[in-house]
Length: 163
Image 1 (cartoon, one colour):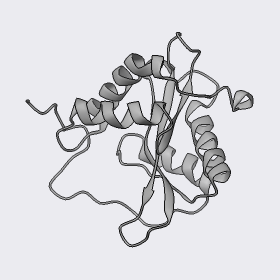
Image 2 (cartoon, rainbow, N blue to C red):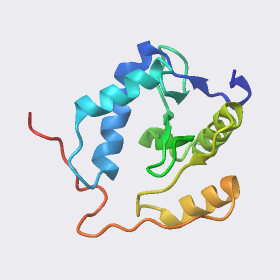
Image 3 (cartoon, helix red, strand yellow):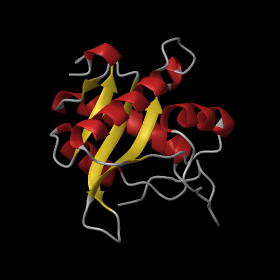
């Protein structure tokens, strides 16, 4: 389906690698405590294409180089569905490798939105390399619509909740 982008839809057997990737992303980006069980539930249902999809870079059974988690839902003020990017994350070992992995995951996200005929909401919630990421997103999506602000929190300070 997305072979021309070298990105595929994730499958249930990707769960362990995707959880490792998601935990690394959470450690790097979270600004509140993250919950592995909640992360698992979001990824697992998207791997079964229940209100979402996971775009994966890497072969089935091979190393996952990066992924995007996309979920469908509604904005608080509407019953119309939107496609919401929950996270794009490139494994640190592949961030400087040629191939434009983040760009390709953005393109995958746009293609899914086009196929579903839904608007896509996507953003950057990180201060690390913010300007470069913003330029990439502006090239992919056009001018930004709004800005996020954090008060009383800093990305990368979240930790695992004790259960």
